[in-house]
Amino acid sequence: MSRVISQIRSFSHRPLPIQAGEYSSRRENLLSLGKTEFKSSSPIAAIVKGASRTQYAPDVFYPFKQSSYFRYLCGVTIPDSFLYFDEKKSILFVKESNEHSTLWDGCRFTESDLKKISGVDEVLGLNEFEGYTAKTISNKNVILEADDFKDMPVIEVLMRQPQSRLNILLDKIRWIKSPSEIELMRKTCEIGSESMNSTIREGRFVRNEAHIAGRLEYEFKRRGTSGSAYPPVVAAGSRANTIHYIDADQDIHAEDCVLIDAGCDLDGYVSDISRNFPVSGKFTDAQRTLYEALEAVHSECLEFVKNQRPLKLNELYFKMLRSMARYFREAGVFESGICEEDAYGVCDDLCPHHISHYLGMDVHDTFSVPRNIEVKPGVIITVEPGVYVRPNIAGIRPEFRGIGFRIEDDVLIGKTDAEILTKKCIRGSEEIEKLMDTN
Image (cartoon, rainbow, N blue to C red; front, top):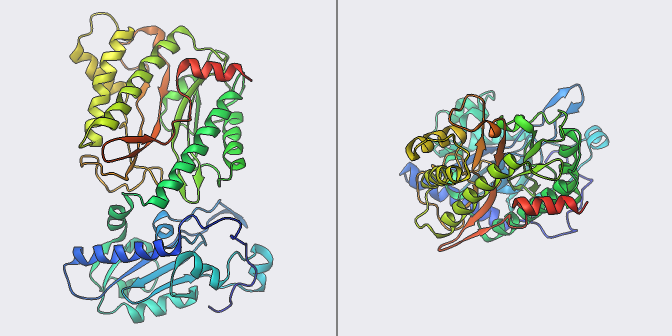
């Protein structure tokens, strides 16, 4: 590199969450998969762009989060970095340091540190990336996301090479988690569960959604994570019917329930949990009836996930609709006279989102993997039925209008069973009330 980084942030206080050898294996697996995709004996290389550091005012930067695809292949969290590797060599390109940048921004890692983290053969300065790539890439098949390089001169060279989409190929590898990834997911889900419980316990008579959002961030960070995995949903009252409501700045009324959808980020791996609680500490009759019906749906869907093999997420969605129609009818949620077929259709309106998605380094992980294929052991999914009684939905008794709930847990799929990674997060109505009563 032009200047080896001279000041470092020590990471020796605990073992690296993912060892360098695993990153090397991931890179090898990607090249091997690329060989199959290209169906060619030509040499193959991958070029990966890390996330850029961006600012919203002069000298004021957004919090940085590394691209999960880049981090998956090398573990490096330095902004504006590139990774090149082929069947013979791997090179990490990072921004050069100088006295000015060291004074203002500091330096986290030496060249030796970066090799230890990532397992790459060489670390070079960012100013060498385009020249090296243009010289090395000729006569190779290339795995990359072309849009990442569209504003760089090297794109002219890259576009002349046979290409395959990096993200789609890597999703196939990332989909099934390694033992070290599973252990990280267990930890982030445990911390997410403990943090949610603590937030609910302290939630009685809170007057504004912002208080709850702030409490969540505090609970995540004090347990050793980097904080929220995504902007949390903290929605009181009828705002819970806006599925991705993230403003979290409105006053809470005494009779409101609060819906929280939140997760934390531990070493790049995330949890995703949804819970609901009455700010008064006690559910109203209508809230309890609807919540307990949804909780019964959730429990039945978890049993389906544990026992159904082969398991497909689309089939889980239809299982949710059947369960909702049955439990909501039994609870008296629908107006009298509605038949089972009509109830099924209303439930499709009551829950307009899918019940499940894949989970890992991203909250909607491995996005290109379809939901209509068999889920393999080692895949982590969410189970998230919801009910949103919006004004335009017909056939619902008036006392339930305006209520929005969803319940979400994270589940590791096994060969014949499943492990609920968020099992420590309370969800029963009586458990919630008891927890709130202890404060």
